[in-house]
Image (cartoon, each protein chain N blue to C red):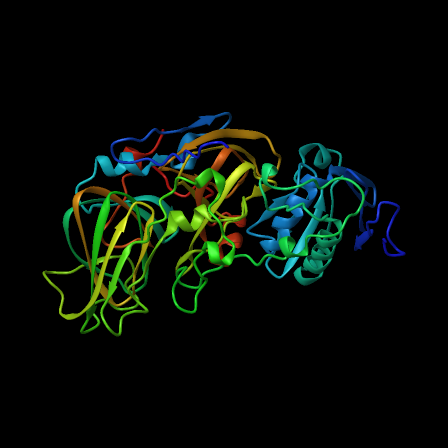
Length: 320
Length: 164
């Protein structure tokens, strides 16, 4: 039975500053002073899942062409139409700034309330149930997954653990042919904690989520964030710094547009072994016809957004 | 049930994608392919295929026995093709100061205690720990992707490796 304050479909309404959020069987309805927006609820929940799990990530998380968040690392702009040339031309954009904790708390509650039993916003479409219909149960376990963030390297003592059948990380159906053999590691006595290697591809083959970069190895601010991808990146990521992609297996196509206007700039097809930079002034969305392995490589230096925004750093990573 | 077929690439078998510009210069994306770069490289030449301010990803052709290397910070080696043995020695004394970043090549065999060995194949990632010396050995050509910091040995030849 739905709580007293829930609507006729069993879902609660939420408000954040002057934004309001309501869902029905098929859609998320958003309102703000002077505007409103409607989004398919499955798409909205997939974007909301990433925004919450990534703690607003690096730069802009566009849920779609209208709504999204801009991370200021401690506080967050929640916006409508801010990165939409049509809205901007008519001065119809709207944004409010909030402490990050306030947005994360509200978004987490909305995500949990609006996610039905059987629907996993992190899963590939063919590996999850439907997001639609009236409220039925929940999937709190799925929507509260902690993002994997290795401190040094996955599998080291006191670091993020490797994945196995025993802990529920089964090999994904698309990666059933990925070799699961671990490297041969011989450590002399006293060096067991430092002589370390693991099967990185096997680790990825056991990922139960899509489009969710997780930190696996760290060199100071250099973070290797591999992820497995299938179908469409549920957000359009707007960069506040350069990031790099290394296609480890299979193929992804990226649509790249101007970060601020959305005007198309390029389309990039990446096959196994390809490397490409995503400049600091673009937005991008990926399409992966089959589950693939992608290494997202980030520089977590907290000074970078300001250096790029002020023009002290060029948006492209290298000149030649 | 569908049969899984994961496409990995290798020195002998890779296909490149591309940047299709709409309103942009492909050079902004520094698009290259690790296997193509390694196929044209000298053994253990450290060619940057990714650069993010001071950090780099280097494509390395593993072929034969490398010199000994060390760094003042951790590095991470991902074997992308072939089989690579990694020999590790704990250095008796600090050879590279903390301020000196990137990989440093050592003269001859380092002095120190043997830490152990790793035999890594395609898809395996190994830690090259701070303060250790390491040497690669590959009986047949292979490829390593190294997560490190730009250093004295980093080779930048973007014009030669990237789509223009």
